[in-house]
Image (cartoon, rainbow, N blue to C red):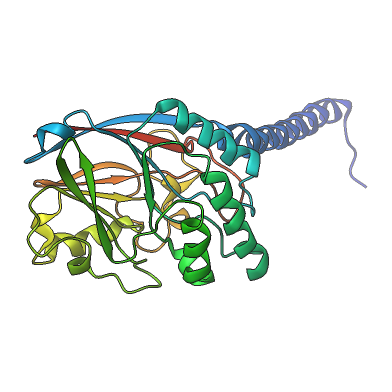
Length: 298
């Protein structure tokens, strides 16, 4: 039998304690990060101010302000109290227009019946938005669950959804064109249908999945689009400081343009980080976002 000297015992004990302390410290740190990202960070709203310089902007729209929100994902992880808080924050900003770029609910672990019922509650909560106009589009989760039911719930609460459609936004006797594409992953998007044949004013297009912007750039009528608004990516949800999101955390058609402002010549893209979460109820270095956009002439 090997003999363990007193000196060996005195060296091994601190080693065991050091390893145990490290493991305990690591577990505590992981628990702390989980608590922070799951309870505080995912409810800490970032109100992001953006200015977009738009070519041929009608003078009446100089200083026009709209709010973009996206990816609510009510019920699976996003609580009703949080969406109520978001609506209050948006109302306090007093925008001229609110745009919602899809995914009101989640096609996830809950049953389809429960998720579609959540769409009704989402519409009812969004009905408290008191801005002059509000419009939305479908997201991939909405389109997979039941686009018609989700659309009805939103429209019955005063939020028309533009699905390969466009509308005129008027101000001071002048106008802009606002279009909304059908969901790219689960629908049939058609850029020809989201603007007039010959637009006589700037064109803003809502497209849930941001990577579709490459198809818009290549489209014969893509040069007529001034601004594309997207969501879908959640910004990656969990990020390390100063680094791009983990690729595994990014969805299909949201792997290239992950968040923020991009330029494609005269056309611009803005990707909102969204409000909710999928997969896990965590956000880290990637807070939920309310975008406040101001239009200025280019």
